[in-house]
Length: 237
Image (tube, rainbow, N blue to C red; front, side, top):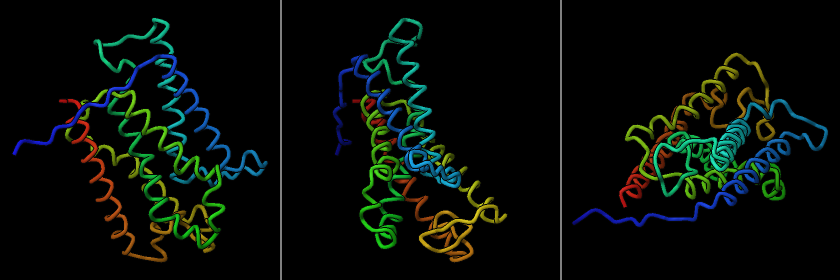
């Protein structure tokens, strides 16, 4: 039996649409960061900056800014394209995949692990608040949409799914360093903790944290490898 066939998704690469999309996505990502940190309520929460959610949203906002600037420079003739492509505005395809998967973890972990506990603690209203949806759902989907629409397929290396784990694991290094040194104390779902996320709380769960992180890692790697394989198939279509 021959391998499955995948038809490449072809979307129009209109420069005005690309610039508009990336400008709006960047501004919305910035708005989401400011909203979730309490800036608009004159109650800026510096501790919120230590959350993986906020850090990956900041990363996406910066990346959208870079993509936007590169798109503008290309359209006014100051950028360069290595070779003709049907997706001329798909810059940094590998880095784009890394950033997209990094914030994709935000969406998956929140909705599958943290959201059920959040409903019990703060109710459905807080879960569906626009600032919460912005950083946990809308901005991740905007980054995913940018990758799907504008990034050229077939550029990922076979080992890239492993490299995609660098960003989340750098955050784990940060979180465990702060937790083990007792640097910051959080209110984790109403319970005092030195770890912002309950599945990282070694004080409460001990060695079970290793198991929980192992499951999350395997789930993430499965998605990353499927992503790379599907991307490769599309590149050959």
